Length: 417
Image: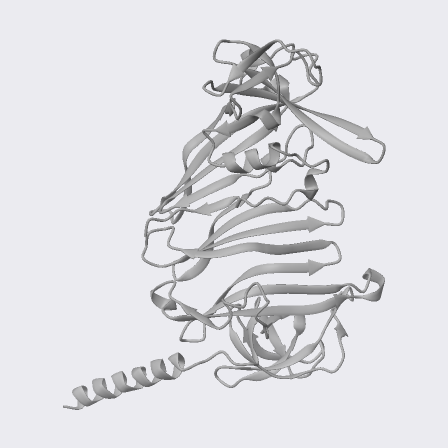
C-alpha cells in the first residue's frame, strides 16, 4: 500500500512539474541566453557570482541600466540587464549575451511568426515562436555605428529554447532574411526550417545569398544543410545566373544553375568557335542533388555534379544568326522548332550621349551543326528548372545587373502534401 501511495505521489509531483512547465508563457520581458556565461552580482565585470547560465536558457528581464557600457575589449557598448531564471536565481548580464523579445508591428516581416505556435519535435510540441534581438553600438573609435542581431526563438513547454539568427546589422555590412518557410523536409512528421539570407559588406554591395535548413535532431535544433547560393564565376560578373536554383521536395533537394567559367576549362570544348580569340565566358548548366540520410541525420550528395552546355529555343518563328557579336550581316537563320546549344556569352556596351545600353550575344550551335552568334533576347532557355529566371533577365538585361530586381524565387518548395 505504501508503495502504491509513493507511486501515486510521484506521478502527481511529475504532473505538477509538467503543468507548471507547460504553463510557462513568453511575456513582454522575456529573453534568451545566446551562449554560456556567469551572472554578475552587480552591473560590472569585476563582480562575479557562481550562477552559471547555459546557452538556450529562458530568462526574465527585471531591469536595464540607464547607460550603455563598454565591453571588456572596449570596441562595443551594450546595456547591463538584471535577469531572473525560471528557478528564481537573479543576477546581472552584459547585453551581448542575450536577445530580448521584440515588440513588432504589422509591417514587420516577422509579424506573423511572432508569438505563434508550432510543433517541431517530440520535445518541442506546441512550441512558442518569438522574435528577439540583441542591440548595442560600436565604440566611438570604431565608428559609433548601431549593432543589432535578430533571432527566431523556439521555446518548448519546459522553458528550453533554440534559436536561429535572422539578421545582423553592423558597421561592416548586414545580413537579412529573404524568406523563411516551415516544411517537413526530413519526412519525420515534424516541420523543419528553411532559411534564405542575403549578406552585404561595405566592400561588396552586391548581396551574397545563402540557403540553410534547420531540423530538430537528437532533440536539439541543428543545421543539416548550409550552402552558398551565389556563384563565384570567371570572369567576375553580377548576372542573375550567378544564383543557384533549389527545388526542395520531401527528402530531396535538386540544385541547378548556369555557371560562367574560363573557356580553357570548359566542359564542352568541342562546341567552341575560335575560342582563343573569344574573350568571353563560357556557360555551363550545372546540376546535382542532395538526399536526406536517415542514419547520419544530414543531407548527403545523391547525384554528383554534372556540367553540360545549356539548351534554348528561339522565341520567334525565325531568328537570324551573326558571324560575330554586333555585326549586321547574317550567316543563317534558325526556327523556333529547333533546339540550340549555348556555349558562350559576350556583353556589348553602348553609350549614346547620356544613354547607356547593353546587348548580350550567345555563341550557339544549331541541330544542323551551324555555330554562330545570336542575340540573347531572341532565345528562351529550356530544360533548366530556373529557365523563367534566365529568360526574365536576358529578355531585357539592365546596364547594371545589380539594379535588376527578379520576380522569380531562387528557392522553390514543391510539396505534394
